[in-house]
Length: 176
Image (cartoon, rainbow, N blue to C red; front, side, top):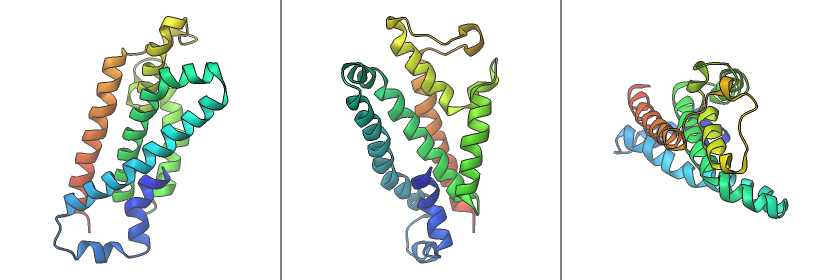
């Protein structure tokens, strides 16, 4: 959330974005470069932080790391793309991103039925449940959660990230 919203929102607020846009680089490439620059930080901090927590837990943590790191990495990729788009579109991107994270993501992610499928967290949890299924771990109420299979979840997260980056490039190239 912090890196994604600040990548463009911070430049807008400090008015250094004007300097960047005066260079002979197409706007979509500036947006893509911002995404490529923030992605290693997001992945390193999220997956690295998850790894540290898992390793601190001993043997069960190492098993959790082995099972769940792909879901954490793919969710981090998608959230980075989403929050960069928020940073490109809104004037106060951090506020919008916090509202999205704590209201929409939590509310939509816990709705019964199919409405939860607009939530990034739903697909990350679906990946996690599939990976942990061989150990008997499943949703409390599988008839309410209705997870998708792991391949579908991974494809939605990667495709969603690509679509959000593409949409962000388009939005950023058309805003003033």
